[in-house]
Image 1 (spheres, one colour):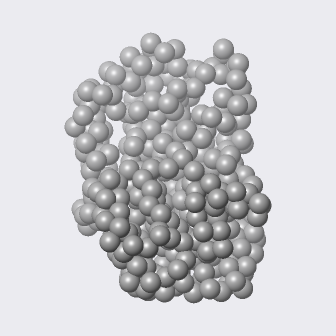
Image 2 (cartoon, rainbow, N blue to C red):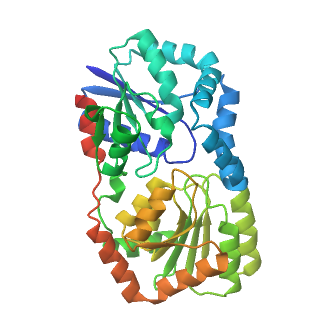
Image 3 (cartoon, rainbow, N blue to C red):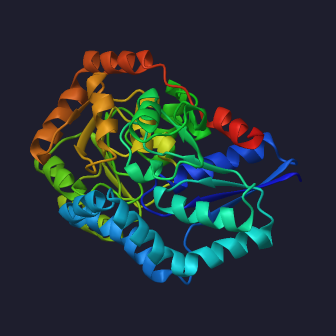
Length: 377
């Protein structure tokens, strides 16, 4: 075993830990005997206040107090706030990370969250400056400037636009910035056949001849999903509606009550699921938010997408990417969203047209290339 690679993440949505898990799985597949991988939370268990502030704070503000998140996002673009925030998480963090690196014999570190870059850089310089630090910028088009604050680490980005920003706007050396295709789970490497779709429909108990509308918003669910479901019920639609609430238990309870009261049998509600590739492939239209992984997964499955919301700042570029390529819409009002979704479900020519536009994007999965780059770096 000549390498031991640690992947540091935080649980702020699914856009950081999800890619980390996929990458670990891919490296283990490619190098089963040459390399050991460890998924490591960036905050130790005793850093409960940091976990609450960054993880619970992210979930609460993005779902219930968006103005608060926007304010935090803008404040953290200031250098003084970066140093102050790093000082707060370093009180216990530096010691715990240093102990982890020494005890585990870590030879390489991959950072999956911008909040962790400064503390990881400082600890590595203290423990062993020869340990490489590779940062994966999980936002492909518009990214927080904290990703680029420290220049002495290697960046992996998912667009030429972001590489240009790193070099020209933030002063990175071009040799330190590497562009790869967006990385997805291997489950999105192929389109389902009609037979595979039919098998999924039967397994999940969905009406086989119904068009399927999917509402999903990543690990925390879609914050306005209840309003969308209520509108769908009010319209007395016969299509199959599938809602994935993620880890948002209160959202699921609210939607469960709406569905139970409606008596409609073609509405299916889930919490956190491990079969999103199945749901995306059988869907005819997807309503979601602008998270990078979600957007790329939808486009990889070549589905029309309606954005009901997005997080100001890092998710804007993802939404614009889909809209400018003619594969989706951004609509705010629940009634208008459902109306547009129904137009998509009823118009086969429109769905075929969007599928063709998705094909023209020539999206390919960068997971293997990135895994090999990290191993060989």
